[in-house]
Image (cartoon, rainbow over all chains, first blue to last red; front, side, top):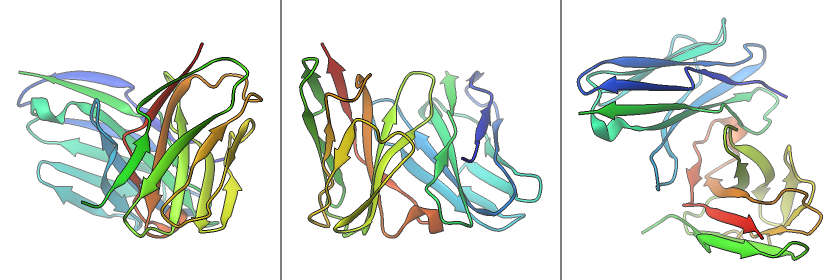
Length: 112
Length: 115
């Protein structure tokens, strides 16, 4: 079973701060890395699906990078806003086509 | 509007009873999934179905059963054999099997409490 680790477990920032989280995954037989945002009382929503080493994707103030050789992905939020408060999940799939394995998530709290 | 619905939102069950959680999608997705979330844990896969009339056990399938008779429906039954059923249950779907990269779309979840 793949082991996907996320850090930190939680963090609290002030409005306007930029922040980043880490997702670590086994690099062998890597196929895809997913990022999801899960706001309280809502359903998780996909942010990015990344497959290529060196991939960088961006959606508004949120961006993600992928290093498949060393097995990590960073999620960056520039100028955090209170509406960015959520749990951010990453999940990894390997080349055998097994099911996604989710990390425990990073919970971000942004105060105004 | 296209999406995934789960019902009920809250469910209470007496110990020893079976209970079925509903999951319906109108996204025309082939693949559907059931996850369980416990405090401090990531999403853990219970069962998945890559296509109608087929399903596979996930990491924690013991005490659960599913069916996939229709493309849009993937109900989960929590049986009395499940030792610790109190949890939050999430259903998801994807156009194709997520192991090949397709993003998943999630329902709002069902919180099951065993009394």
